[in-house]
Length: 150
Image (cartoon, rainbow, N blue to C red; front, side):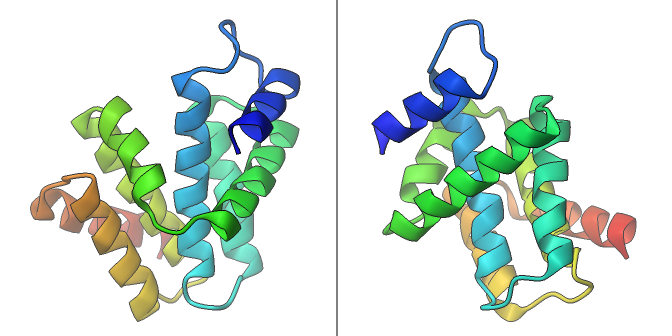
């Protein structure tokens, strides 16, 4: 896994320091977004399109870089045994505001297809708990995403 991440970021993502924590953060963020998209058992085109948009906004990626990051994230999600490998990186490197923004992005993916599935809601709640986002901030992120995508 680490070698694939290094190869991907070394070849595709422009960074000044090579593979480092920022690269892993990008992958963890993308993986969590993909998890939300896949958790209800259906993958809508709207959800699939929303993820690269969010990654471009969040990390300043080119469209091709965002698409490649999503593909790598899909592979990592398929091999992951838990959310811990992703949420541990978030806890280590994200500020409280970054965590709030991440949960907001998760909600945006969930709302992209116009319907919130109970599995999507449970997953986002679980991620929020794992990254120690206060419940009031979780609710605010949900409401903000609902109001901007609905």
